[in-house]
Length: 162
Length: 382
Image (cartoon, rainbow over all chains, first blue to last red; front, side, top):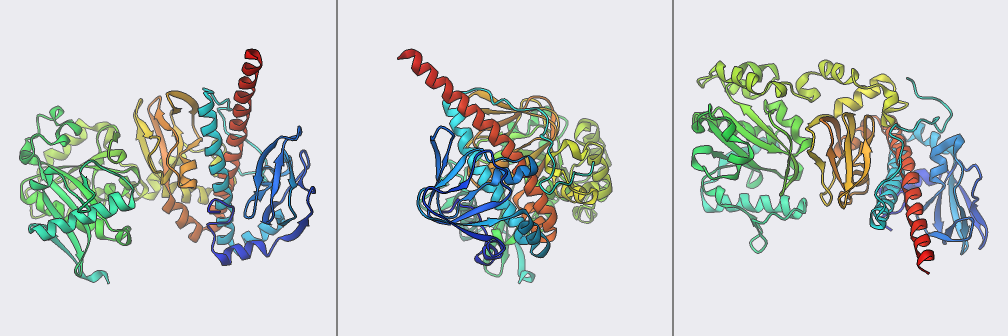
């Protein structure tokens, strides 16, 4: 559990984040996220477990309490689309943190917001580290990537000053 | 509580062993490094050079809180420092004028306090009294700015040390009063009672012309440093800085240290702990794992951010393919920014997350490709 989202926050900070979200309950077989859909919230699983499934049904990962869902499309803002289905395989409780909820947090509790963003970056860093190691282990020699930095709009639609 | 700080010279066996135990606590217990001279039974860290070194410590009451040693070059002609600092290239400097400062250890709760400065000032006093005017030190990149404040300067390429990872050799021309004064070093005042030869400062400026300029804001002065950086930084080229207003960009840059890396040098090494991340300011670097180049990095790109965030060891080497400049950002910097300017920290971390997502998608694609090739290969074999 030490690697889960918001783990590095204090109990109070975690409460400050979660109390701004809306609680959803999902029954077995219900989708938390649908591939291709615009999904602009961060969802935190409070209890139960869910599977990340590719279109052909292959299970890519199993998520549990403390895991975050939808973070990639959240960060991609208007362009963001969920890349896989996330389906409850037990009854699941999730808290959805909308963009507006997080913007509100940024205004009222900026330090907590910063820690939430840090936690998000940490989740991604760990996953990238794990994926990179698998690529290296698979013997693939080159990761194709653009030499220039990605340019995309901010999640809130505004553009960076140039 | 810190009014009782007292500098002493470790001469008795008890004092020396207390220093060796402090070293062990910090290097082995805290930093998880295992130098071959560590004694795991007595929990002490000492090597033969301690016998010829002047070992100084800083005590707070009865507690030892920091220590350092200074070795006078003539007393250790075989020391590895002689080769490490390439003294054979400096035949013009008499060995009697040279010393090596090393094993500088500060207990965690005294970091960021005046402890380091007090101890280095004590080393300076001891060294100058012996007639030493050239002192070498080898420090971790995040500490470069601290040493620059004291008046130390870089003079050679960074080195990947077997014990400590990437390190930056630096040197202090102890009687270059003009330079010490210019960078507001606290040592400038201490130089007064000694015989100071201006020719030594002139010698350094000529001999190491390419290293004459310091590289952190505290030494260069904020304006000069920011002018230096903003000439290079266009926010659009730097995904980490996108969305930040100019004063915010300055605040971020101000907190960093520019590390210059020579072509061919490693900046980070797989397996090392990683407390800092880097942003490429100029030049080209390569990420290598298991002998393969897995990425090429250019201006604006970041590296080291995975270990920085995950607190796991570095997974790959990063080496400079051309001469390069990288901005180093420490974990302490991020924590300071989170407390002092949380909105800026949030934006920075969101930018970092977006950068990670982009890399994650590329890496996942590579993995899927590699797995696809494997299954094709399996199909052919079947």
